[in-house]
Image 1 (spheres, rainbow, N blue to C red):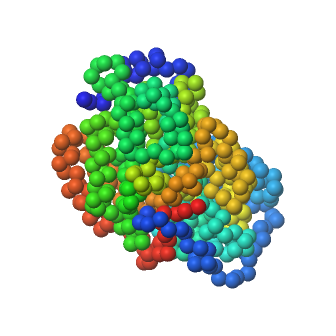
Image 2: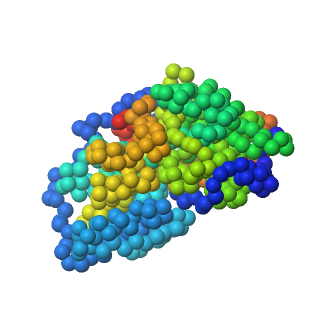
Image 3: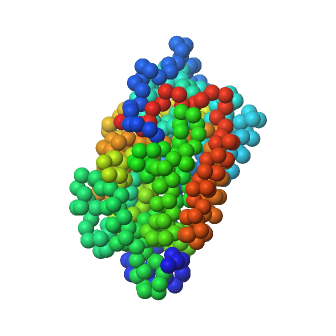
Length: 484
C-alpha cells in the first residue's frame, strides 16, 4: 500500500497529539584496529613558535554557514573571547549553506577571504593549492596533540599528515526513539527490554513492524517505524555495512565500494524496508509532514525510531515538548557483530591570506577547546570534540534526555566509529548518488528491485572515475574504525 500522507491525515493525527506545533531549528571502515599511536603520526618540524598576537586593535572576520551555532552558541563565545582579548573584534560573516562553496572559492582565489572559514567537505582542494594556513606549528607551540586531544574525523582538519584546521563541530550517529509509540505498539521501552543497550537488527525489525500502522483505516500508512536517510549514503547506506563487516568506502585508495555482497544486501534491505514494507518513511511523506507540521516526522510524532546525528537531540529538546516521551539509544548490532557508528564534523580553517593569522588561530582554539566547548556541551548543539577535558563530558550529560550517556557512548561502548570519506569533489559524487536514488526510490518496488545491482555497479564505476584527491593519497596510515 502507498505511504502517501495527506493533509487530512495530518489534521486527524494532530488532534491526537498534545501541545502546539513549533518550528524546528534544523542543522543543515575493515577490521577494528586502533588509531595509530601518536608516535607513528607525522610530527611538525621544530620551528620557532608563531608570533604573539598584536596589541593594536584588530578585526578577525569569521565566515560561517552553520546557522544554529551562529545563533545559539557563537554570540556568547564572541563576547567571552573579546572580554579576554579587548584588542580583538570578531566580525561574523554569515554565508548561506548553499552559497558557501562559491563564496569560499571566489574569495580565497582573490585573496579576500574571511580570516576564519567554517570548514566544508570540498576544502581539501584549497589545502593542496596552498590557500589554507597549516596549523602544525601553531598547535606544537601550544602543546596541543591533535591525535590524542580530540575525537578524530576523516579529512576535515588533517590531510596527508598535515594539519590544516582546528577541530570544532563533532557529531555522533545514534537512535532517537518515540518511547510513547514503542511502548503502545511493541509493549516495552527499549531500555527496559535491552538494559545494556545491546539489541540487533532482528529486534529492530520487530519494532518497525509493530509501529508501522494505518491508524485511520483508510488503506494508507500514516505512522512509520523508522526515519532513516535512505537516498543518501550519508547516514543511510553507510552504517549498516560497517556493522555487518564491510565498508562502502575504500578509504586507503579513496574509492567507493557498492558492489560487494554485503553492501548489495544492505542496499536491497533498505529498498525493501522503504518501498515494500513501508517501515522507513519515504521522502515524499517526510516532505508533506514537514510542510504541514513545521517540523520533521519524528518531532511531530509520526515515527518510532529516528536514525540520525546527535544535534537532532538538541532539536528534539526544543520542539517535542509534552507531545510524547522520547529517549536515545545505541545502533543495533548484527548477530555477533557489535554496532559501529558514524561520527565526524567540521573544523575551522584559516585563510593563508589572513593579515591576523595568530588572532584567527587564537579564536579557533578558543572555540575548539574548553571555553567554546563548554557552550557546545550545555546547549547540545553538538558534542564536545575536545576530549582532553573530562569536565566537558559531565557538562554534556545531564540526563536530558534520560539516557544521554549514549550520545557519546556510541563512540566508546561499541565497536568504534567510521566517518565519511572526504576528498576534493566528494559533493559531486554524492549528488550523483542522490539523484540516482531519487529515481530508484520513486519507481514501483519490483521494477526498482530488478535493476538495483546494475544501478549500484554503474554508480561505483562512474563515481570512482571522477574522484579527485590531488597528487597524493590523503589517508595513508589511518586505520579504521576509530576507537576511543
